[in-house]
Length: 316
Image (cartoon, rainbow, N blue to C red):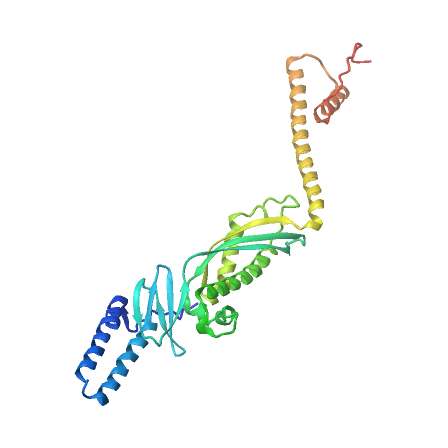
């Protein structure tokens, strides 16, 4: 999106030079005028009035600016550019100098309830770092002035803190919408054990990158940039949390049982192969089946097996 921000190229004077003119030269001219035209008051009075007026009017033109600050210059409603130099300066006192901060700001978005891809209600929150990128769009493309002027006293009374809080409210609303959109595209977890599917819980950087792109697209119109966005809270909604906990526990038990059975089958095969290789005993198919059954019971049981000593033969 094309930017309309321009650099202010109007008259700018070093503040200390202007201060010298304001506090030294103009008072000196005033004293000289009073001394030179003491005998001609009709001529002296207009000059004195002009010098005093110049002294008074110069005062609003002074301002100082720190790093990562900017002034949007507006002259009787017309945008004249953005001034970003640091230091002490003087400009046309009739210029409206709207101060903005270009520093990075944190925003912790409270967890909101949304439905994931498969319809489960979840709670999801994020933290993001944002800053102003285009001062023209921030000031004139969105109604930040009205939002910041909570007292309704006019735009001239709005402070930089009020403007930045208005921008933050705009970012908060858009981040809420972006978070709902991204969360609705993915499942909370891989319920069907499809490890190839991207999920909110396992997506990590991919989910965060997509969330950052969504936010930058939404905030481009307002001249704001997302530096970093991270999901910092993710959980099932309270109404299904207990059910999902039991599902997770069941899934964990099933996974553990699969590992136990896999290991038991491997051990039974190893035992049978060892018996046959060492020719310890010859077992027919029925005895092998009985042995496999007994070994699986012993290896897969939740409790230790109680041994039974056979004092007879294998045939009894």
